[in-house]
Image (cartoon, rainbow, N blue to C red; front, side, top):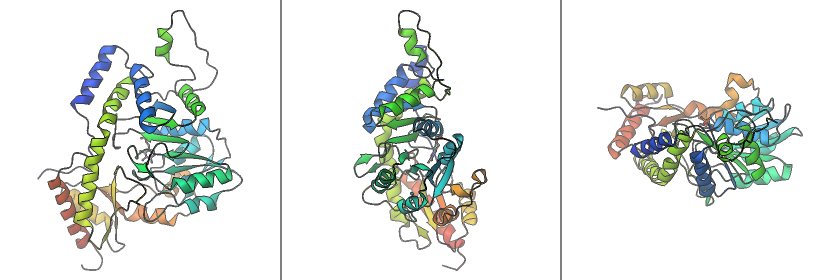
Length: 379
Ligand SMILES: *Cc1c(COP(=O)(O)O)cnc(C)c1O
């Protein structure tokens, strides 16, 4: 019996053909014709004025905080149950990440928890679309407006999700997305900053390229323009090779999302009646990209034993995401009990666009058997 991987990127012939075109063009570096075309495609798809192609979502968060003027000593409230990139980015600027607990049913940041953490030093909030499910932006944006705070949407996993009919990636004034190999659309590594504020986009684009404008563009001018370095910048550009791959991936995105949706729907049919499992809940006003499919195990179930059994049968699985405040790097003394509980009890089971119905059924059977075998009280 073949193994069933937890994740599998859907990259194929079309992406290879796009890469071959970049090779032939002679410009594989960033901010060339492909990068520009990708930025236009992103701006159109998300309905935003500014899209900046970047080497990953982590650097997009860094540039977003820089553009918003975050300084040492500032506090930025971050969603706790997440890959901890938002807290890392806050620390890049010498500011303090303040961890906000999440909703038990969605894993997304709890707007009330955010409200309770606002102090005179708070400058903004980074909300996370947890493994592809948008957070509560109506409440979060209203709260931010009341307190004069910025909101950044970490939509790393949520390209293709919607909230009240609007696309994730455009739910806050500044958003960051990821095209890492574990996300729904990928160039291996990749990311973008999306914003309704052209000044933020310009600020970020310059600082993604050592503080100067596109070298490719400069070479198209007749004459000899010599750029001046007026800012300390970084090299956070996305290569045109990656941009070409992403143009194909974005064209395929709706089809890839449909396939993930079908897998999620089948898991719900097959496992919805299992008392030892809580399946993901998607509120009616939003849609999920299913970057990950996280089930929550009953407290009586030994998660480590379940995972070992699944992996022993060749079925990929993993923990959910992280309770950020518990990661030693941040030396936090805060408590986020809901996030800590999800961190202990959630299990990621195979979710990608290449799963067939037979594999989904095998996963569901194996999972049901494993949770029953490893529950403290007999079932
Ligand atoms: C994956 C992820 C990131 C990091 O994205 P990279 O492109 O790998 O830097 C940031 N935030 C969240 C919520 C993520 O899931």
